[in-house]
Amino acid sequence: MSAPAVAAGPGGPAVRARGLTRDYGGTGLLGVDLDVPRDGVFGLVGPNGSGKTTFLSLVTGLRRPDAGTVELGVDPARVAVSPDVPEFEPWLTAREVVDLARALVAPRAGPDRGGRGDAVAEALAVAGLADAADRRVGGFSRGMTQRLSLAAALVGDPELLVLDEPTSALDPAGRAEVLDLVAGMAGRRTVVFSSHILADVQRVADTLGVLRGGRLLYDGPTAGLLDAHLRPAWRLRVRGDAGPLATALRAAGWVTAVREEPGGALRVETVDLAAGETRLAATVAATGARLVALEPVDADLESAFLALTGGGRAA
Image (spheres, rainbow, N blue to C red):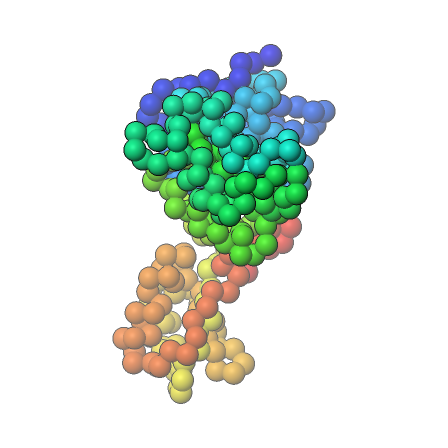
């Protein structure tokens, strides 16, 4: 049996996996090589049973691999986890739950913290539970329990934060709040989170890994997956004659196709996402066209995911 996750020292990726395997009879995780960049947001996506939770449990030491290695580029004491189905003693209040977590992982982060405020109150506020701090958690909804788990993970100010399906139990407003929180952590700590909601991953993750059947299909920038498996396309609608704009676009080297659609709209395909995102609006302005609408067509992670996994084809 191989060793659990160990610290690899400063520098390099926050997590490095090589040949990582946890085999449950053909399922689990099978020979995965994966690097998680430091101080960024890394999304882990895949269908149910693809190995996402297994990978996270191996990273955090909750399970041991059958083969391969996983190394941490951070102090293991500075790793925090929020599981997909968190559970807490129902008679405790939210404040007591988070304070217990603080006492276990960061006993020096007491009420004063050298004059920097109460770590427990701060974590509850960040997770959106300040008004429920003194309520017993046995009456919490699943969404509130998910927030409480996040607060308990944040109270120790981790360097590596591992979140398993952090938005699955939240309503749209709650999802947006948690995703904004995760996005704001980039540059200050490393966040690894799994999700089956691909729009959430695309919104906040700068890099990602795609798993299917326990094997890694893709590991790299989110934009790179979109570029590799989609033909980025946009729908343009301008007021009046779109002919001059269509001519200018067809002459641009970064445009691969321009097609007229019913109603006078133009469908414009580009060599990559960056070209469309940075140059389309400028071209519209240069031709003097009066822009009515500009929107992406199928340039999303779900389309790329289906193209990569064989569940669909590129736009």
